[in-house]
Length: 115
Length: 114
Image 1: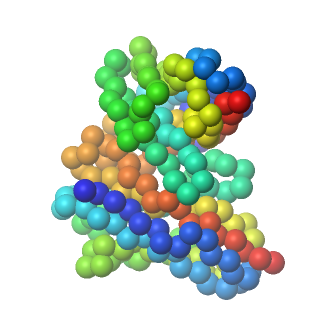
Image 2 (image 1 turned 180 degrees about the vertical axis):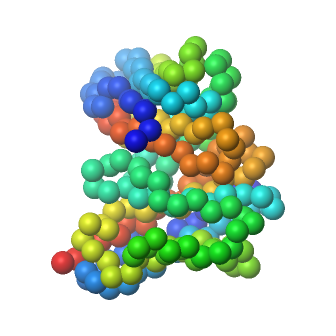
């Protein structure tokens, strides 16, 4: 069965530190998609990135980077030089091609950036 | 921003009363979802719809029903609200391009059952 594990319930770092949020997934499909979402204290869910199973290239967007490794079934998210505004709950999600477009969610990691 | 609106945004209701939450989209997306979010559980799927009058259950569907009579509206009904249904409810939509497309979320509805 498909599953997404975010083992880190809460992470607290001081501003300007780098931080990595882990995401490990389970799937039997060869075609699948992975997502990261951010939920700031205001409560809305904001899409950050999508990655499909055929594209293992890492991605960088400003201070954000994502490391997708099929060999370890991981899709980790790194924030470089963290800022207080990065404080949020971050969710990783999985969608399989044949799952009728359902999204399987991790439990989320609460990231606290202290000034 | 995707055009997706949830109403009401906040509601307090009494145990045993029926409650209907509404999700309205202006994006003409085929897929719509209702999730609930509770501490320690992330997002859990209640019901979803893949077209008008086409709906299916998610992992926590007991006590909930849905209806989709128009593409733009997806209603979630709690037939007889219980305290365990106190939660934040999110509606989401996805465009028909397939599973590789991201979901867009409404602002959420905070429901308190007293």
